[in-house]
Image 1: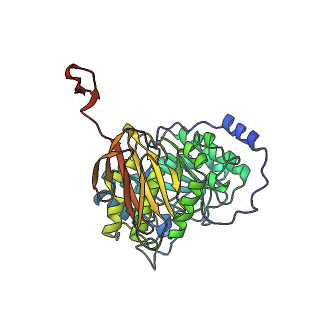
Image 2: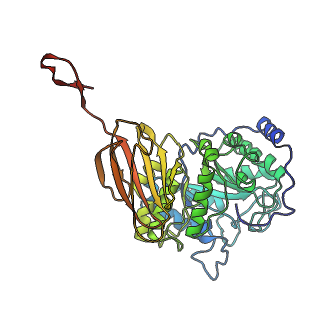
Image 3: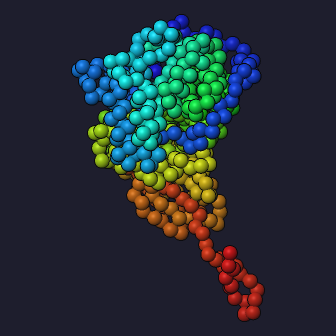
Length: 437
């Protein structure tokens, strides 16, 4: 979702329940078997925007060189093996007009070899290519959009090019056009026979909440969707997204799961707006929200510290947990500390202790019992960032974490496997005997 004015604005809401019923009746569920865990990769927009001046800035303009470069970095710098596999083009890639046959075409100066050649190269590096479209007369950047009448044609074009993900924005379209066009694109993508992950901006244009957004039906149409406004390169922007997702978690959390994800937008780690602690916080909070991990930074010049955050193996394991349960904020303290919990497979959990304070490190004392963990359980705990292990933490034990300003402490917890336990039996001598499990 790009912050651009839409022609004519939105008409008044019209028969929402009936509209959704008609959508369900018309739409073919996506059923593509894709995005069983949150997609991971790289997306151009936040870092490179709509920079098309390749004469003045050839290294950073939206051109095939940028995407070839980023594909090389994902393949050669350890990203691909960790799961970062999508190279996603955003707005401003196309020519200003469709061709004589009405087809979308890339800008001939900036993409002289075409999108098919780019896709072939990306695939040769063991990666996947994503592209941007807009369900409207124009994209948010003013390039040709995909009107409802062009949906099938554009879906076929993307498939023929070898595209693996489509992000469909919604600038310059009406509420009625969105209600018809987004489900129609799901059906059209299925009809191509090519597996293409489908990312929708639809709910963001409808305020992100019921009754305008029916998440049960949305999950049958899209693999992931933008719920809220665009992220900017600032801590305030990150906090606004976290606040909105937390305030509406009762609606959003049940909608997420394998094949259908809430998308709070890109990771801005490695750019200009976040401190080291804030970068660690965004990574942890996006992970506990089961968010897609789509970086938008310059992988050619990324700092070692930002790379270390984004390549944290345990963090990625948690994000990619096969249960696909989105986490929730479970505690909001008056002294600006919050606790988030995400249930994981094999009875494990991820806990985040997050401080919004800006003064000094804060000592936060609690227990797993206060966080509603099961009684009489013993846990092994690993600090996700430091790697430190705490063994034998009981549910009732008090503990203290020290949280840096704007920072997090993140734990991975799992019940300890006991080879035996002691049960009191009334045997000879009235002793305690081990019970082998």
